[in-house]
Amino acid sequence: MPRPHLPRDRGKQRQRPGGSVSGRHRTAGERVRGRTSLVFVAILALIGVTAVTVRIVSAGAGGCSGAIPVRVVTSPEITDAVTDVATAWSATRPQVGGECVELTIEAMPSATVASSLTVFAGRAIDTAAAPEPTPSEDTLPTVWIPDSTAWVNRVEVVDRAAFVDDLRSIASSPIVVAMPEQAAQQVGWPAPLPVAAVKGMLGQGLKLGVAEPRRETASLAATMILGEALASTDEDLPGLVQTFRSVAKTPSTDELLQILGTQATAGPASEQAVLAHNASSPAVPLVAVQLDPGAGQLDYPYAIRSGISRPTEQAAELFRTELLGDGAAAALAGKGFRGVDGTVGPGFPSTEATDLQAFAGRAIDDIAAVQRALGLWSAANSPSRTLALFDVTASMGTPIGAGAATRSSVMVAAAQGGLALFTKESRIGMWAFGAQHQEVVPIADLTTEHQTEMNQRMAGARPSASNQSALYSTLQAAYQLMRDGYDPTRPNIIIVLTDGGDSDAAPLRLEQFNQDMQKLVDPTKPIRVVLIGISVGAADAENLQAIADIVGGGFFPLTSPEQIQTIFLKALLRVGAA
Image 1 (cartoon, one colour):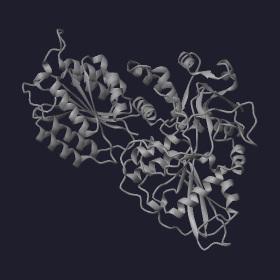
Image 2 (cartoon, one colour):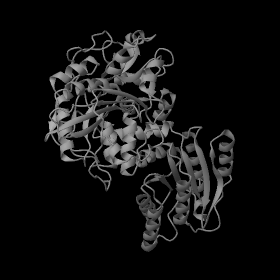
Image 3 (tube, rainbow, N blue to C red):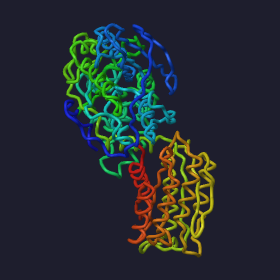
């Protein structure tokens, strides 16, 4: 797996990742704000009980004919530093075309903003929470400062025109392994921890904790590193899943740092987060252990949303210039942030917990590696809502090769083995299809009793006398059922195990199937479709691949039950959400 890439040249335009383009980008509406020097208003974020602070920094009325509102939404840990810079800058009465710039600095978790932006564009990304409510355009930020370019890239997978091209970082913080000092000394600290050594340490005294990587960038980087260290081939993927399931899990990095020394001995975090944790006088102070090679850095990109008015964009650019200046460097350093080049500035906390040498960091901006890591984590830990479709046509009784195993027996063995990949909180159901389809087991919680019933029903499956396969209509009905009962808090998956395509795969029928599916698809309710072909011929493989292309899923051939876990994990990676 590729490691996180080096940071972009912040003075150059950049290529956007592929993805759909939303059909909107209207000019942001004007908002009227009261003129006040500095107002602190506490509101609640729409996730959990995370506090969000809005700070309105006004330039004052002197010499201004109006006001240009610029709403800057920042990752919470950097809000105080950005506000300090904004307050000092606003006192100089910055203007664009004779109008004063009126800044609003607001703290909001990056996952919340990313969800809101992608919902607005038409398809929410997976942030391990229900999608945010659809926002109005005038509530979207003018400028977004998430903790990582990874968040900008994830949004751009859905809306590649979401931001202007000139993306620049304003600060950085290395991603490290936070550990109690005694535990850190046992792995060689203050020397960096070799990534290659981590595999041998797991289960040998090193208990790893991970915050939810779909929300926390430091843990995202850790899952990318673990993926490379523990799964060099596809056959290693089931073992990696077991590792992901065995780590101590917390919803946030703050909560992860609280359990180090008790429930876990090591966990990914930013250097700044470790410094902030220690500043709170915790019972167990932590040190920041760097990795070799490094796990990358939080790079705090200054992302200006596209589609805003030119004066507003110019005002946003002026504030960015201020944040990149020497005065801002001191404000950021005082809060534990390094410069864009990885060096520490005046006022940076000087403690034994971290290395003050310059850090040659890398932004987490390889979207393919990000999606792979998120897909694996989701497959390992997310309870799903899944409907399995089993082919019971007569051809499923055909022996495979010279052995006694039939396609049907391979399908059953593979499906029973595949159940081991689902968490106990998953909801799973089963249909059988041939000339028609019928429910065998309804979608329900995967209790011990439900799993036993599924195994028994699968073991008793027998091919029918007919070789008619109504795969098209079965998939349409399954998709309708999954869409109607869609669960936004978990992956919604259809798995098809079959030895062929639809009995009538003529071009006109395939085109009709395509048209019917397009009517069913709801971009706000993504349903993953995995087609597993058991000993299929070339013509059937072509039809199954065409079906996969239509439904945005994946087709994977299978010849033995032992392949199922690897195939299923590869399938989730291919058809997983951003």
